[in-house]
Image 1 (cartoon, rainbow, N blue to C red):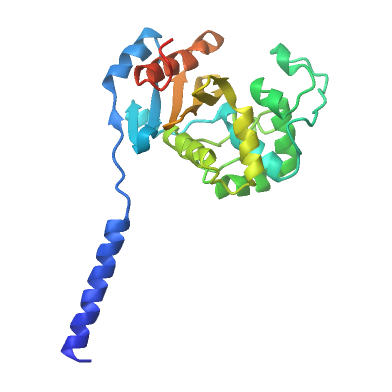
Image 2 (image 1 turned 135 degrees about the horizontal axis):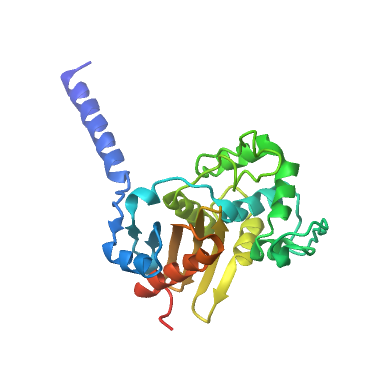
Length: 276
């Protein structure tokens, strides 16, 4: 090989490597918002929130309690978002109108004690409907779905002492961080999950919590007992604002309102929700 040819190949290789380096996206470290502690303190709450603001073509990542935002917790009923996609993909449910007959078991939350469809099961957080989905799917198929969407640790297994009566997304080994919650929600927002488009659109529709003429809030709560979630996004004409909040709930039911109260105050502080 001539010196000229060798030099030419080296230059091509360097150019190729430089091109790869340039093509790699620059991932900015989330900005820690120390002032958000005042809002958590106002509600006497310990926890974290991660907010990704993509309005106006920008991408601003803000976080309170960075360490906790990286820590994985049981997703609890926030898992109803991907679980609904699994059920639709597996043909366990055909549409939002299909009725799931109540099994007659009296549960502590009255709205659970009635027939459900997919929309009401999401709104009422009817665990028994999703327990039936999990039973029909089985652990192996659930693990395949979880790995397919890279959801947290993708582990639907249960410890033996709770395997008979528990739900793996509440009492099992499945766990996800606030950062990972937002990554999943981003893919759903963009219809980029490996599921049929109509399934993704339906799940987003049944997630609607509130809507006005120029914005839509899509979200889901979750409660494991010791801690709670509120995850979702606000859609604006200029772009979405994603969020994932996780807090401790030592007072159990008395603490549940804090999930939305804290998140709404933070979203209002960045004008992601109207001040009124």
